Amino acid sequence: MLARGIRSYHRPTRLEDALSLAAQGAVPVAGGTRVLASPVDAPNVLDLSALGLSRVESEDGDLMMGAMTTLQEVVESPRAYEGTAGLLPAACRFRSASRMIRGMSTLGGESVHAAHDSEVAAALLALNAVYLVTKPDGPVESPALRFLRKPREDLAGGGLLTSLFIPGAPEGAALERVAVLPSAPSLVAVAVTVSFSGERLARARVAVTGLEGPPSRVLEAEAEVEGSAGSADELEGCAEQVARQAPFREDAHAPAAYRRRAARTLTLRALRRAIDQARDHEPAQMDRPRPALLVRLPVAVPYFTSGRIEITVNGALRPGEAEARTTLLEWLRREGYWGVKHGCETGECGACTVLLDGRPVTSCLTLALRAHGRSVTTVEGLGGPDRLHPIQAAFVETGAIQCGYCTPAMELCAKALLDAQAEPSDAEIRDALAGCLCRCTGYVKPVEAVRRAAREGRST
Ligand SMILES: Cc1cc2nc3c(=O)[nH]c(=O)nc-3n(C[C@H](O)[C@H](O)[C@H](O)COP(=O)(O)OP(=O)(O)OC[C@H]3O[C@@H](n4cnc5c(N)ncnc54)[C@H](O)[C@@H]3O)c2cc1C
Ligand code: FES
Ligand code: FES
Image (cartoon, rainbow, N blue to C red; front, side, top):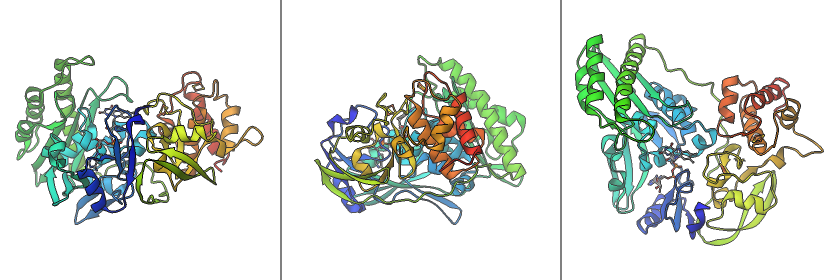
């Protein structure tokens, strides 16, 4: 259990208090998917979830996003589509196939972690994002080009990333990637944005992943097309510069030469798509909007090492003992909710999924304290052997269960989907179940079960 080293937990509601804790060395926890899934040394954790840093707003054509905005919130936000020509939502969807991880990972955590293969970081570079870091002595702005290279430098001295903004939407944008499987991390990804002035490309930004270091823009490639008419030769020249100038990585997944060749092709494709979008004035296509769920700002927890917490589980208030390091998985199983399955403890298998205020989360990467004062639904809350919930009945009737280890998670993900979307498409069902790994039944029958539950109007 990787959270074992945590000794104290703090959840302030005021930014000043959070800054003071960060300055004293408390480790910020945003979605927690990195902090709790890796052996990070974090004896004192600072939960950022009660600071109100989760919002997507537009102002005078600029897009403002709180650092705690989750990747899934970006995918579901019409403003994020308009403000980025669809690029950021596409990148957030590609970043993680798992619906649960997308619903937990935040733009802030993703940026500070500055992963080498992050499509989100590449998109933010191509969009010229600007990061707002608040420090004890005031706020500092840092362009993505700088922040994503060395985030720790900008955060030094107890700084917290509070928000980021994207100045002016591009007219066209595209993301192209290559991966071993659609759900696997990218070997290389290329994010492109373009804007025209008359017939000339006034702005072109090209950012790539798969490098020796974090994602980076390729300024020489941008210079090839900026000010040009975007002819086939000029686009070829841009793609050639990407292949020549970017320091592609050699590792067990792919040789550098492969990444270089792939990046050339992906750049051409991305440029063509972005230019077509800009010329045709095509709005970016977004998913069907879902009704917004109640956003409940968690209550303050000034300082906690161990004691009593209260979580509403399946509609009933449940007080119980916890330590700062106790995960929600551990707490729920200790309280007798055996339907919450214990698997990998790293967010990979999805077996421990529960609904937190209606949203699916992996309980192994959620501290019990984060659920204090909030509502959790486990499979026991859907129904039991005497009275199956219609979704559970559909799983039984379609033969979507063999050993059943993945079933509670799948049924809860189905519940969250059908509560939001009574008539989901197959793609929406697959997306909702993504992140729940099944090692015996497979995925065809569970998709059929959810389809059946939806068809028969059995969502409640
Ligand atoms: C199943 C799974 C698959 C994953 N796959 C990949 C992968 O393929 N590649 C990869 O690189 N990563 C991967 N990750 C890691 C992780 O998902 C991402 O890095 C994620 O985006 C982190 O976001 P978070 O909000 O959960 O960050 P957290 O874990 O909460 O924080 C990440 C880091 O940022 C700091 N931080 C967060 N917010 C702030 C803030 N506002 N101000 C200052 N500091 C802050 C934290 O202290 C921490 O150091 C995966 C994780 C899981 C669980
Ligand atoms: S995802 Fe939590 S146990 Fe595997
Ligand atoms: S039914 Fe056994 S893991 Fe899915």
